[in-house]
Structures are given as structure tokens and as C-alpha cells.
Image (cartoon, rainbow, N blue to C red; front, side):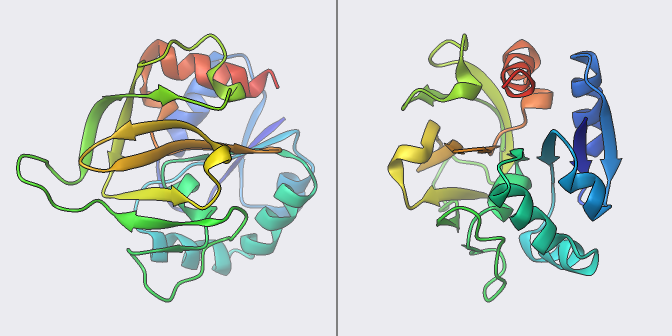
Length: 201
């Protein structure tokens, strides 16, 4: 069973739909025991970092998600779900992230001709042999919607990057923990391939 974490941070239905399309048994839940007994856990999310961390705290999910990662359960963060895995974000000074992975979330710097939020299709540069990207061609296009980007502290965990006025760490993998800044569930065939690679791990 794949548990999709429900914490009022949107975008859950499209993730559920994509996983169902891949023939998976999916449960949307905010129940700690269900999350910890799942085969895989997906943390989706759109919205603000501070609000999302507040929602996770109110539902008692911060220790649950940290334990999920520590127990070796396969874990996928998507969009805001990637950002929450790290230590802090420019979007919410003073708010502590989950701290499951080392790094920080920075604001995309304003630049002439660049619209923020970064919204739309962007190509990926693949590196360090990420398992999510098996049979995904270099420079494949995926769909982004974000105003903040990841700067991971450990370069070797970065499996895909993108350029949008700044070098964006677009996907990471460390042990059982995976995350994408882009939306695989909205990224057409390439995105489905990435999700298929995750469910087949």
C-alpha cells in the first residue's frame, strides 16, 4: 500500500490519480499508524512552507514522517513535499523544516525576463545515476510551479537539476528518501515513468 500524506496542502488528488493509473493500492491518510505501516509514503504539497509545517505539527505528523524516513520506508516528496524535507526555507524564516535531509530552500532571485513563480516546462540535467530516472532521457521536460528552490548541502544526493536564472536542485535521492521539486504527476509520460520507477523500487 502507498500512503499519500493528507495535511491540507493540496495536489493530493492528481497524485492519487497517477498512482492508480499505475495500478497501485493507494490510501490518502493523516493517520500515523497507517503511514508507518505503508510500503511506500508520498508527501505531496503546494502552498507555503510555514503553513505546511504548521499543518503537519497540528496533525502530529512531524515525528511520524521523521520515523518513516529512519525506518527505511520508501519515501517520495513532491514539490512543497521536497522543500519540507530540508532544514529551513527563505519563505518562512524561523520555521524549522523536517530536517530529514541537509540543505535549505532559497528564493529564486528576480531577473529581467524571468517570471516568478517559475511555472511551466523545463528540461532536466540528470546526474549521479538516480533510480527515479531509469529509462528517462537526459534533457527530458517536466512541469514546475515554484518560487523557491532547493540548495542541497550534499551534491552527491542531487540526481537532477534545472536552470531558471539559478541552478536548481530539482530531484534528490538519499537511501530510501526521494524527492522532486517538479510535479511528476503533471509531467505527462516522463512523469509517469518517474512515478513507475518509484513504485517498482
